[in-house]
Image (cartoon, rainbow, N blue to C red; front, side, top):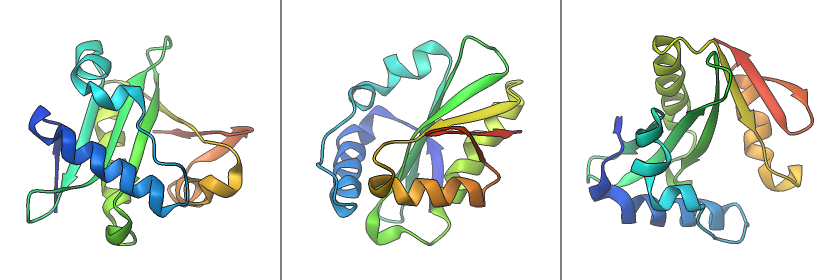
Length: 145
């Protein structure tokens, strides 16, 4: 598995993977508008987005971040791992990649906005605290980098 910056040639595979990931969690598969144009919604704004690729050159995970109005903070977005690839360290590696880049960009606080209801987002509410994030208000977590 390799993690690399998103490339447009992976767009359809990324969308397919996200839809599958949502379906596996019992959520209605829908695609977030920002994923339809990663270049405009992330790279053109100075933000970043990565994909995890398997040995068959297929997307098996993703994560992005966007800076806030506060130059020392950024929100993580769209951390997904293909259902059949979970519990192999892919999500952790994606998170570490994003956090490392944020630190290099002078971002000192990583933020996450979690979904509701909590029962549908149970993986996120478990994953982020294992990686040093703390809830600071309902549905929001943060970590000092």
